[in-house]
Amino acid sequence: MRLSSVFVLALLLLPAVASAGHHDYGDALHKSILFFEGQRSGRLPPDQRLRWRRDSGLHDGAAAGVDLTGGYYDAGDNVKFGFPMAFTATLMSWGLIDFGRSFGPHKEEARKAVRWATDYFMKATAKPNTVYVQVGDAFKDHSCWERPEDMDTPRTVYKVDPSHPGSDVAAETAAALAAGSIVFRDADPVYSQRLLDRAMAVFKFADRYRGAYSSSLHAAVCPCYCDFDGYQDELLWAAAWLHKASRKRVYRQYIKKNEVVLGASDSINEFGWDNKHAGINVLISKEVLMGKDEYFQSFRANANNFMCTLLPGISDHPQIQYSPGGLLFKVGGSNMQHVTSLSFLILAYSNYLSHAGAHVSCGAGRSAPPTKLRQVAKRQVDYILGDNPLRMSYMVGYGPRFPRRIHHRGSSIPSVAAHPARIGCKAGAAYYASAAPNPNLLVGAVVGGPSDATDAFPDARAVFQQSEPTTYINAPLMGLLAYFSAHPNPAEWADD
Image (cartoon, rainbow, N blue to C red; front, top):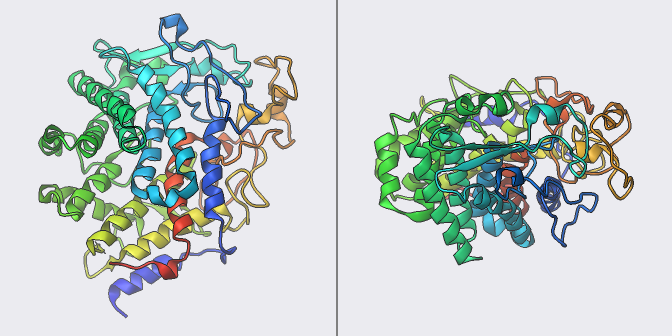
């Protein structure tokens, strides 16, 4: 047995429970998209399927003289945070771009989910050199437990502009618009071009007026969505998406010029709404693997090293831990955001490698072919769907056993249809404290899940780190589920 095979075998034999059998990835994909309907803000369309939700936030932005209706609530609260919303939109789009054919009958509903975000970002960036980045006072909102349809907390509007820079959130917004332009290139060319034109203008603003939005708007955005990793990664990330969307030489040159100064190789072991470094390297490495740009070999090397840190038994310096049940985890709250985002990068990179006939090389004769990376990603998806020690799905509405007491205001309080009278800020506390299951199923929501090495999950509303769903958990999961719905059988995978 080759040395590389020994390490790959160690990876695949992570302590885990026996498989619960074939999952219906197509059903899980449909439900993961449906979740976003439950997170909608604004006037709901006639084809809204989660009927327990109603219109909300219909006057957002009015006090500031702008229309900021629409968009998504990020999690179980009623604030619209632009930074994670933009990352959510970018990752939903990336899934459609790379795995669009695998979405099958769910492709159009996935595009609608993207458009609910990009329509909002077109409103939020309509004023030149300004990006509206948040609607709602987070502290006052979090002191209430009320339905979005009833909310009476201040809908304060926050923005970044030349006097109050926010290169991180502005660049992420540009990335979302650029990625969205690719999604709609064939389906709606006019809309696609509008998104791309706006993305270029917003990126120019983000790059010209540099600074972190958590410095300009610290009291409003911290500690919820502080930028702990600086704005440099978002600038590179946005440039990479603009290059992919426009093929303009200026963005290629920007990446070349700023690779070192903006820290392309920094913090490579993370990927999420705050840290884009690993994503940058995986995204750009496709150019190298497709033979389009040899200059970017350093990004390919960074992506390769990143993959090695995720594979237990292969790397001398693993950056990720795995639970006894096989779940990838990083210390902190809402662990599933790491599981889905990192698994998405693993799957995307495996496809780039496969098309190029390449492997991941980790030195000292240790390597892994693309099929093994896919197995790692699939193992994480299967864990989420029920192949875990508790034999429960972490997606609401999927499988016979799933979280029933998720940390989510709208889901946990009787719907407007069931209880037409207004439920005030403090009146909702009784529902928060109740041990009863949530009355409204937020179908498709994936919660934070187990957050340590015990594979434990309390299913308790108060333990928000584990019981709260977020849009940025579900966004990368869409692409994963689409791929595995079209390629469910590992025996049929092949490395080119």
